Length: 633
Image 1 (tube, helix red, strand yellow):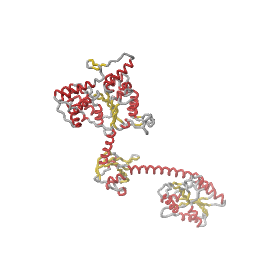
Image 2 (spheres, helix red, strand yellow):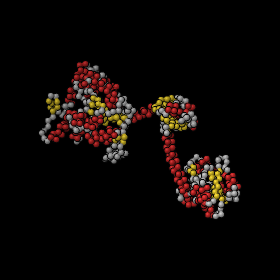
Image 3 (cartoon, helix red, strand yellow):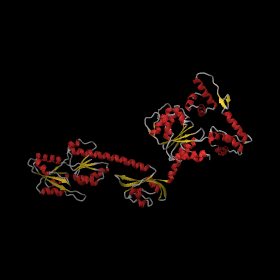
Image 4 (cartoon, rainbow, N blue to C red):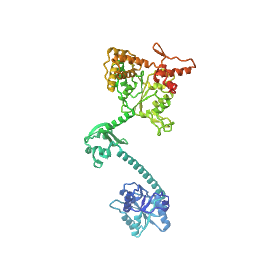
């Protein structure tokens, strides 16, 4: 909007953008028009001189000055001289501090030019007096704005409206457009901030450097049962007498997760100073009711439990008092205080995931998810998409919208990679990049997704031997084997077996609502001396059978004999003969690869399809077992 005390040059008006309106008014009339324009939504006004000053005092929107230049004045006076050759003297009316070099102008145009200045405020304007002063000095031609011309005519003088030059006008318009654009962006930011403050469930209070409340959002109103308009502008000490900000406002200290009781409401508070150019201008506080935090935490935990992304075991769940188990628990507790990768090794059934979950439970990531992945349980392509996720259309059958991988699900938590020694070499390379770069790329994706994850890996293999055989990357070995934890087998802690048996008997007796007689010492000694190749898992399975079948025979001893016999016979299925109590398989001599396939398939049948046991018995990787047995029904 251009609001001037005089007409704009027609040629200049044609060069202006279509959204620029031009109005003519001066001083008080212009101020009244400006107020109405502001109500209509005009963002910037362009004006000049005293009229511009009157508008600035009347509105809150920006007013851009388009002041008359010396060249504009010379152009106007030169036009007058050409029109009136006999003209000898001319008056020039200016506002406030505007000054022109009239001596030089007079030399250029060959006229006597005299300046007059007027003042304007809300109570007084001396423009008419200055026009009369010019008249009294014998000046009969005067240049100025609309009111100057009006007062001159009343005195019989010749008044001429001073126009603004084209360049000055266009520069003012450009500046006004830039200001309007900045104001629009600022409004968008303010609206976004308002929407955020109105939507978030956290209470927000801000104060200036004097501790006076400048903002209080709806959540804060609800938490403290007060209205923003009642407290904004008041000192914080009056609104919240027991809510001290001195340390933040004066010293610039940040306060995080402080527990306070304010207006009889227990809250968790965060406070930060507002600092610009190293000057503290105020502070902002966010807070939540303790009850809300507790409810949110319970809800999150329920959701994580529903997804299975939570650790359930703690070190207290590890049964045993032996020196071997105490030593490994002590070391694991130390590892939990760090964020470094841990490699847990041990025979099958020693409780590697129990230790992984226990480490997570007392680590700094305990509030985050715990995601477990068995690297040997899935074929290579499926394992890749499970670990790293996939984008929509990455392969036939891919879900619409894609799917987050286990690393993404474990963000800010722990990922447990069980049987990592069975991971295919190609996926080992991808895993190494994730560990090094802390970023993951989905299958079929093009962008890297940052992940903050602690890795705990586990294996029942000799990983270094796998490195030497070319089955495991050496660089990955060093990355995951920073902190290592070797779990003892039951053979190494036989003194814990009675305690474990009693624990499992109690567990399954309650589950199946059964009571069995106490195991005699002689039987317990037999169980303790057994080598338990499946370790705690085998012992638990054995004890569960013991409880389930306890009503079928007369004594526990007979049942133990039967279970031992059954355990041996079940592991010998499809075994035609034995040599020194070791299963023997006979195959026909033919090409080596065919003999190898038959041996793997026969052992696979013998152990009931347990691929880990096949790999352990034959000294080969689970990947090889998968490949050789994938077509078996």
